Image (cartoon, rainbow, N blue to C red; front, side, top):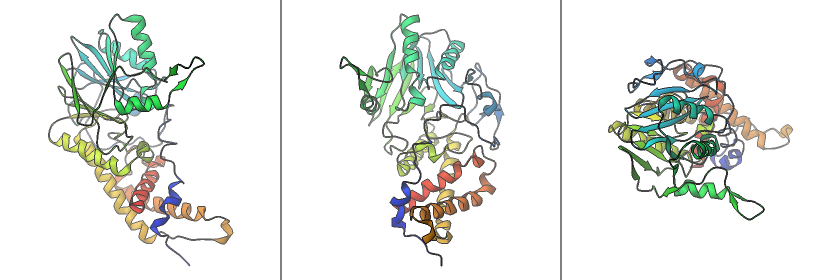
Length: 368
């Protein structure tokens, strides 16, 4: 006899897959078995020539394998995309203000980021931005602060939202003298970004936006370099790739989609031409549209599987947890098989990531 589980079983199987455990402590080199890429125009990276919107860096997987080598690509007149070992940062150079570094990356990548900045310019690093408080994107801030203190007369200002600051403080400890110790330097410029906040960095206009969906994390920030039409929105999209496991640990999947639609709307209105997602290639509005289409395809196939996937309680199993896991695995395998003709060529398809995406969508559909 085959039974179908009630959708109210969702809280039971929610515990079977942790969206955070795998998603954000991937500080080591990451290997995906398949490195096929979607059709696009691929070019060699250039530190002097701006890439055209929609173009991608060629052979990115091979270029980023060594965490001691940076891939540098000029975007607009003053903005650069820098990739190190499957993580990306954004560098803004102003002739008067110096260098703004958006997300210094983790402790094992920051030395390479510093070398890349020196390749781009000899101007001092005077500003650093934390997009959100995940150490794999910001732990290297201490190294940047130490470098500035030892090698520059210019002061380093650190920008972050109030939400980022609060999260940093939540994870502080006290030493034997009762002094608070944070894992990274505390921001010096803390602002509320709920309505957006624009600053002038020399001649560059940089706008900070707190997206309403809080999709990746409640403290994640969109950082928009308006002059060059560049958007930095970490962990929301891996352009030219499928999303990382569990959509990079998106804490609010409904909000994740909401934030992507907001990002796309701004791109379609011409507010930005390039997006740096902190991972993957250089993105365009078309990459965001394709990601939303992928999510809709996931939802369609999960819906089909919900109607046919068997739910089989067996006394011999000795516990009911495994019944839900077996049902869940059946659904995710069916979704993967259905999506392979359209997405099988994509980077990451055979890594097991698609199955985690299907389960994430399954949770969203059955919980709500």
